[in-house]
Image (cartoon, rainbow, N blue to C red; front, side):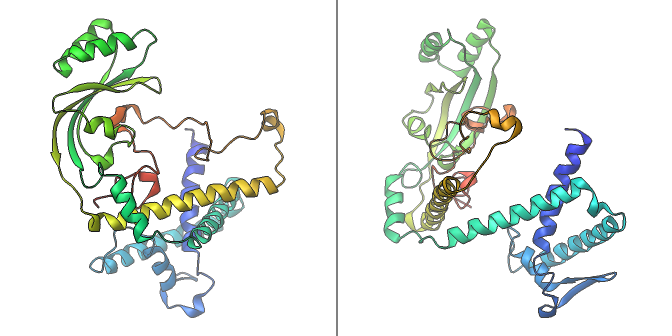
Length: 329
């Protein structure tokens, strides 16, 4: 990433924060002043606006969080004043970043409005989801796992399956891969059921302690896994209900947004120009229904089943982008 790209990335982040903080700036008459920075004022409503969007704020640490937010707003205001003084607000990259930040805020406001009109999950829906996913709740387990993952080759499949079937340990698998001259990565981790991709979890639960299997052979990679040990740690329905409800609602909101965007695109006049005009057909956005776009690969140091983020929409979580990792938080 070159210097110009780093600037744009930083500008987008900072200006997006500024756009959020700027909400309520023009309503100073209805809000107390929290601080004055030269000729500009920072209001209590601005501090409270950001406080409501700050995670992990409790009654005990709210006062400290407010002071931290105000300190950041003061620094931001000072930097903004200097930027205007240096006429940076007229710089093409800054103007472009401001426009992009504004577009992001408006688009997110539209998404929130769309979601707010959706019905909340019923008790029956939550109860049914709990019953349909015992592997995540009533029969939830904690797995101590060893994994070896490596790139797949055309001729390796059958030989790998036979070798894994007779292997007594992961060391046997590693020794065989070394003999074949195949580079691989090893990983050991303790994972709860909700931290494992749902398409892998049923097969993993069917394995006995000490058993070794090839659990993934797609995406150009092989994942060989051994269940070293497991421990049952179920979650009762009352504990799981709030998380399930949040997940069902988020899933519903995502589907509603995809459907809405599909309708809007059909009714809009969208014209591709220049180099994009040569593309055949209209590209399907990643994540849309029917999209054939490949999923982003996990970073190499976090590769394999253990390092892979659970796919969104596969199990309950308060954040749709984090799979089911928030289940116990």
